[in-house]
Image 1 (cartoon, rainbow over the protein chains, first blue to last red):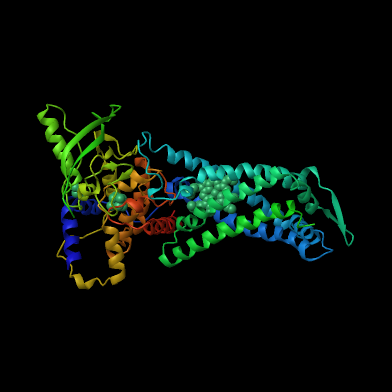
Image 2 (image 1 turned 180 degrees about the horizontal axis):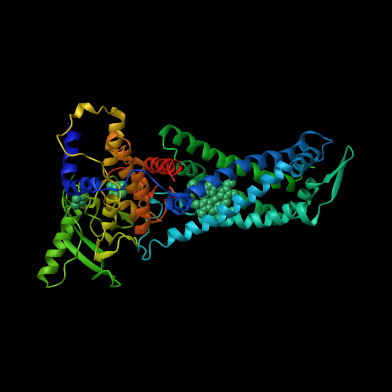
Amino acid sequence: MLIWNRAKILYIKKINWHLCLIFAAISSQPILTSMTWKQVFSSSIGRKLTMGLTGIFLITFLIVHMGINACMWAAVYFKDDHGEMFNKAANFMGSMVVIRIIEFGLFFFIFLHIIQGYMLTVYNRSKRAVGYAVDYGSKGSKWYSRSMGLLGTLILLFLIIHWLHFWIPSRFTGVEEVEYNGVKMHNMFALMQTTFQQLWVVILYVLGCISLGYHLAHGFQSAFKTIGVHNKRYQTMLTGLGYAFAIVVPFVFAMMPITMYLGWVK
Amino acid sequence: MEHYNMSLHLKVWRQNNSRDKGHFENYKVDGISSEMSFLEMFDVLNERLITEGKEPIAFDHDCREGICGMCSMYINGKPHGPWKSNTVCQLHMRAYKDGDTIVVEPWRANAFPVIKDLMVDRSAFDRIVQAGGYISVNTGNAVDGNSLPIEKDKADASFAAAMCIGCGACVAACKNSSAMLFLSAKVAHLALLPQGEPERKKRVVSMVAQMDKEGFGACTNTGACEATCPKDISLSNIARLNQEYLIASLTADK
Ligand code: HEM
Ligand code: SF4
Ligand code: FES
């Protein structure tokens, strides 16, 4: 009863508002919605939708990428492996037509994510011409949720160096070859070993992974909210899964240069 | 709680009109009772300014009981001040102690231009609601309440969303000046009820379009809005809004 009385007070206070809305309804346009894709994706929600969908695609890519790379640790367990399993896995990915087509998609989505990310950051920044003297700061939100553009930029810087290290040589400038059972392929394992001899490279990769971790700590659960998952039970589940993903995946990636540098993988 | 009096240093934003640049002005107020509300403290200061022949500080207020959504002050870096789930009018001076310095600013967002001092123009919210926050009601006799069965859970969720008083604190708190928490509350409370069904898709599409037109930013789910909202509007309403929008756009006729 108490809550109902409160409701009535609330509504009576707003009665003018609501009355004029009812009149507006009577003269309103047809109910049927017409909407172009351009309208959808240029709206504020559509912009976020692009971020969320490309973000989820990048998350699935990370799982595949991590799985392939983890094959490098076969060299720790099998004395005579010396990176054979890793090289074969990488070669398998590089030689399949389907994967090469998906690679185009991957680049398209990465660039879409980056470009839309920067456009969204600029768009949102422009909405408050005069700022506050005292910032709201972390009283209501996590710092990394407010720094997605910055974290993304750090990831981008890392990505550029990462591409220069591995992707460019394997696709264009060439990598030293190795032969298994008569099949020649790139010795990506050896390339990793030499690349991760330098301490600065290892540090840079670890920093890249930390940036990715924080980006995902917010991004993972946010992406699902963006595509409309509103049920509390799934939100709780996805937030937990998101934190786990944001810790485990970057950790596994970071261990790759670290274990190579320390000479545990030969 | 023990009653006490205090002296405070206030740093208040003063601005003549929307074109004026504006500046902070310092005031020292004495004899403020811990029983006073924050707005009453401003009343005391304004009385003094008037007797001194100075221009009183303009600020919005109406009900002073936390239900109208008019009061709007950004206090020491938080909309509506330090207390959780609270409006400025319900903030009491026992939140402060003698000698404290308090910085008071208006809501900051391009879509909320300053009218004067701490008052901002929030008519953008009215236009968003006019764009679709209504239901069709035919003329004639009022229908019997029981002829429209509504699940208790849905009614509760709808009611929780309908609690939004349109104060704009969510916009003020958001780093993107996004009005998504407000809009999501308005959309969710109707989308959950059978009365809201006829305009369900049209509503969400037009209201989002109006929100964008008014110059609010896009939501990035930081949660700053939920943390400052006096009515505890849940962030999950925004996800619900996203779903409503997605379904409307995917099922559009053309
Ligand atoms: C390469 C540079 C990158 C940049 C510049 C970048 C930038 C951004 C920006 C600005 C946002 C929006 C912020 C927000 O919604 O709060 C975002 C969201 C996101 N990013 Fe990235 N990002 C990058 C790379 C990545 C990578 C590699 C991944 C995952 C593997 C990723 C996953 C996500 C996810 C899941 C979201 C959340 C989307 C949503 O909230 O709907 N991003 N990114
Ligand atoms: S959602 Fe909360 S903070 Fe935003 S306008 Fe409504 S009551 Fe105010
Ligand atoms: S004056 Fe009405 S809510 Fe504060």
